[in-house]
Amino acid sequence: MATTNNLNAKLVLLGDMGAGKSSLVLRFVKGQFLEFQESTIGAAFFSQTLAVNDATVKFEIWDTAGQERYHSLAPMYYRGAAAAIIVYDITSADSFTRAKKWVQELQKQGNPNMVMALAGNKADLEEKRNVTPEGIDSKYLACAFHFIVVPICHRMHTCA
Ligand SMILES: Nc1nc2c(ncn2[C@@H]2O[C@H](COP(=O)(O)OP(=O)(O)O)[C@@H](O)[C@H]2O)c(=O)[nH]1
Ligand SMILES: [Mg+2]
Image (cartoon, rainbow, N blue to C red):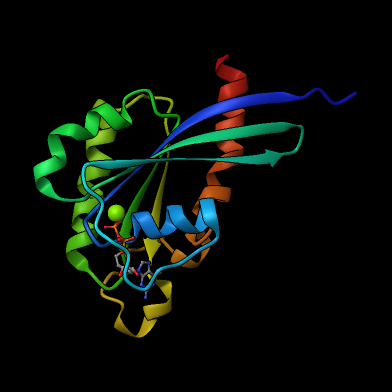
């Protein structure tokens, strides 16, 4: 018989300002998209619950601000996180450079069991694409939240 598992997973979004972190969260939590999304100040908290097979995962989501002046606050949000989504804008090479720096920082200082997803956002602006990293196809990362939920469940079960 299937057992019910309720898991809580801290999830953090990191990436350049304007990459679309808040928009991804808003879509995931409320199913909305705003053409003029306001800039995040510091960080914003959201939660959303997903059912996956026999488990329910409650995401506690920290949507961080991308500005450099908030960088020193970031460890507060990624420390203890089960997962991180690092977002870049496919039309901005700078945002991709920034995303790679986040990946390096998390590899050095983040939780070693953390599941990381790199999300190339603004896939609708393909004609303005400026980032063509080898081996990364943003089409597969468009649903980043669903994409990472299975490894989180797996890690939480095996690490419990
Ligand atoms: N065309 C397009 N614009 C987007 C997309 N995601 C976000 N935006 C826009 O990009 C701007 C910055 O988004 P925001 O979520 O505030 O970025 P954040 O600073 O990373 O949180 C806003 O004007 C959004 O409407 C997307 O997938 N496509
Ligand atoms: Mg934001």
